[in-house]
Image 1 (cartoon, rainbow over the protein chains, first blue to last red):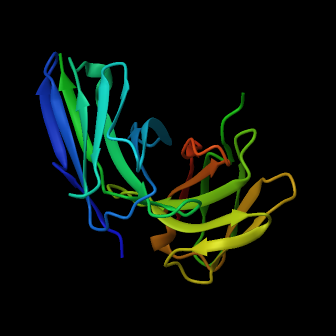
Image 2: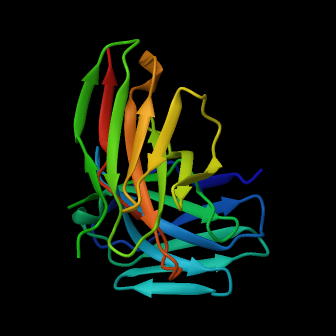
Image 3: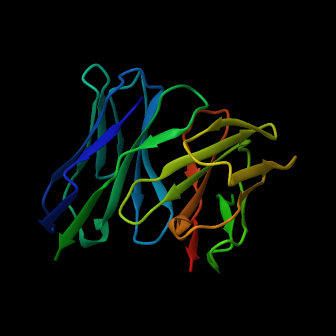
Length: 112
Length: 112
């Protein structure tokens, strides 16, 4: 059974700091991995999608890496801003067309 | 291009009642999944519909049922509501292009 773990559960940083969020999964046989952002009480916004054949994806200040063999992904946020404050969720799809399996998320707070 | 639309946004029901939540997928998407998210937790997979059939189901009781219509929209029905069913219910869709899931803003269900 696939399990996804995110560390840390919460993180507080000052504005401008670079930071890394970690995601690990128990079964390395994944189809893809997706990072989401969730603001309090809201739905999920997709940030980055990494296919199993890819090593990383970048969008603006965000960079996500994937190491399937070790069952790990990281989300790197450069030059953090107060607007980045949210919960970040990592999710994997084990086979094409099947459901997302989520971690519990990392709640990020960026202070100005 | 409209994203995933869910209705209603908020709902209050009494224990023992039945509820129906609705979801319209993103244009071009034919697969719809439903997730339950309790406070402070990651979303938990309920079930997934494709071609009007339930294709995959998570660990949820039969009180949770669904339907997909020919236009790909979907409903989630929950019977005999329990206090523990209070949560944010998220709908997600994806298509055949492999671009990952798109989520709606969710329906906040409160059972009293």
